[in-house]
Image 1 (spheres, rainbow, N blue to C red):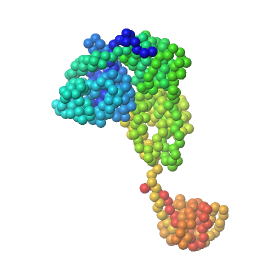
Image 2 (image 1 turned 120 degrees about the horizontal axis):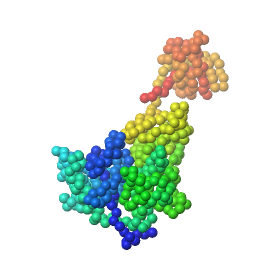
Image 3 (image 1 turned 120 degrees about the vertical axis):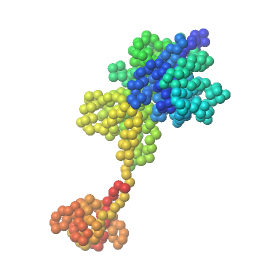
Image 4 (image 1 turned 180 degrees about the horizontal axis):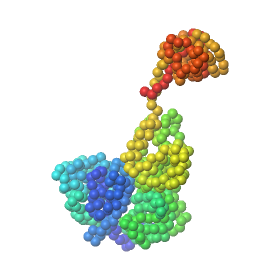
Length: 491
């Protein structure tokens, strides 16, 4: 069905807040409305895409909050695609940073309207004109410099300019003439998704058209289900949801992927036909380089957004010396199957902001499975690098420890010989490798099984003493050969 112009109605704008870490995105949302939930995030960094709705001058506005840390570019990019307007928050004292540039690229790719918010104007060192010049270098020309991008000076800390920013957002929205057809079949986007211990797969979503109701059959390209619960962002039960309204949806049979479009279907069979990719839990093919060490990981996290962020980080790690494989990547607590998979694939278990059930805890302890709990991406990143470094096979160098001149052959068997002689240099060591030299040329090498002197076993015999050696190897030792004892040690 296509939109009928006669049925079109104005919908609230969906606004995404983007910018460099610590430039004030979370503070701005807190200033817009008292979103104390944001302060509960570990380390003060918002690690999931959240959606919030406010009312200003009698009209509704929906805000997406996307993380500012560089590891979260995948989530931030998806946030841009679902929004109508982007507010680029820039610290008026620090100016344009790496993640500011990344955010600009996301906004350009999404093709959405842009407003620049020059934050922290309460700082004495704030220099908005400098920032405008830096933005100009990135292709963002604000109106005061003759461009078409509106900008506003604010202080999320003091609240200065925040109301003006909201008014500016509403003005831009009116100019864009955002409209939707409520008579069409419901359609929207998943902006966050996670496994709730009590409710099961739970998703934050934004409806783009139609009216979604309890009992509706919904599906994405990876999940389907019937809407069992519909709530607004504050947890209030809804009977139906409208376009641009942030909703918490319960009813999918599995956790859908962030950024997936969801549709409403008349029957479950139609929803099943829409599924294209039912699982991400694919064990990778073995590495072509068999000598290359591998770090296998079973990854469990609290939300799909977290999984994507972690997997994006994994892609940045150099893997010339050691490979990294994610054997399983799934939202939800660590369970029995996860631990069994980790054991069979010799993986470490990563639990990011999730718990382990009792059976999993027991198996981990019994089978001594390596496992790590994380609350922050930084800690996970540091541990991963550390584990990969441990896996790298350090370069080994040969060290000669002694020499011996063979004077007698006592016994010769299929793959063994007992020979005697004088240690001429260093030590004859039982744990060393034996190299056979004949007239200056290497004949072969083998293993020292035993060293004896006066019918007693020794670990080593010093230079100037005679001994007998039980040698194991393919090549035959002859009288007059020189035996070189050597080891490989890590450089």
